[in-house]
Image 1 (spheres, rainbow, N blue to C red):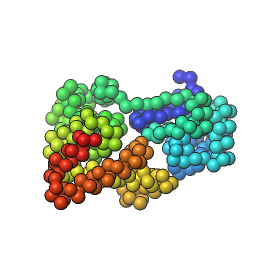
Image 2: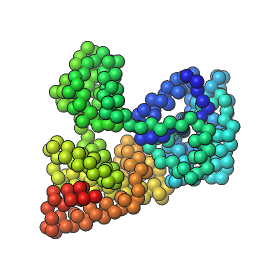
Image 3: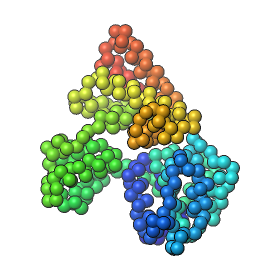
Length: 320
């Protein structure tokens, strides 16, 4: 594999992006002393660029990885000197450095000069989620690599329970593989026993579908949640909470808060903050405000007896 000097990865499938970056690092032959990682939410871009512009330590090549490059979005702007240094490096990259920019789950501001120049000079790859057929093939390959068989009906149930997020699917599939052991067979019953369906994943998916106004997806997710035995009151409260949290996170992001700040202020785990911030960055602020207001009005009508919760919630969902 012939490496280029600069890579830019975008798109929502962070698990695949991470795997692509791992392959590039492996192909580079860089040792641990010549692999640097920077999170732009914690460290300014200036330090990463100075590192990239420095020759490797007693080696032929080094790798510099930048995560969360918010300066490529509308959320944050670089200082004049940092902007100049970054553009200068893009025009004159060091041949012995492989610079990888991981912009997964970020919406780039195409108006910015740094974005335009980066797209001209970098190898750009947008990594999209796998289709159902591709995920099915991936599940089968993972099982084969671990000397485990999986039945076709088990795959269907697995994908329904684990969802299409590859990181979550990988975690749940590892549980199944360890459960049956080498030469074992994963059946539908085993999947039902071992795989944990996280309702919050579905609620986040439902929330995003509401904001996207994707009626077909809203109906499918809602009906599946009901079929799984979830109470309408519970679903209403979870969706309302999810929208309020997304709105709060978006407002905090626009005020300059980082992911770590949001986790601390909202008293949530870093993992949950990651997905909350990801969702908040991807949606329109005015849309969130409108839907939070609609749910607030609906809550008042339900509590005052003007409408029953099931009819009201479904009217909200399906009338978008």
